[in-house]
Length: 116
Image (cartoon, rainbow, N blue to C red; front, side, top):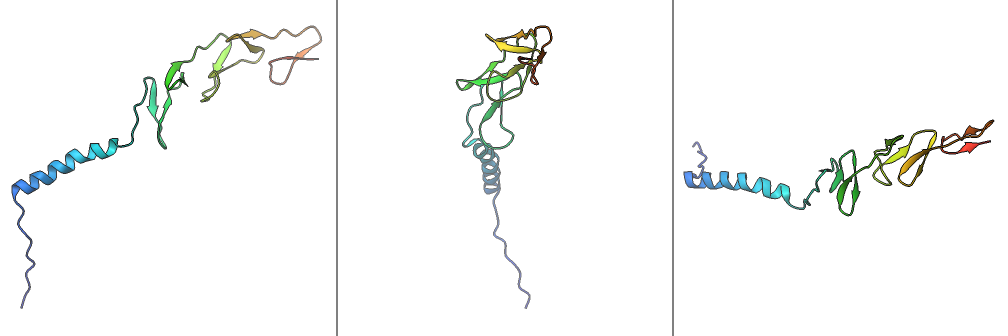
């Protein structure tokens, strides 16, 4: 009394339909809930949304190039101007101006002002 397992026959048409559904549905599900990524940005590696590329910062839903003045360096921070002045300089009118210490004075610990 051997029992033989009967598997229903699948037609070629049914196999093609299954393959088509598997191929088409993958990209559709992957794109659900994704928002448009602005120019000069990339999708966040973790979580949802996007972030600006390294020399850009977010402004009004897009990414604007950071204008790096002389004597400044990029901070790679998502807030503020995206740059800070080097030691011995301070920010003024979107540029970095030298801090001039008078005789017998020195710069403060941050290098942005003079200490006496």
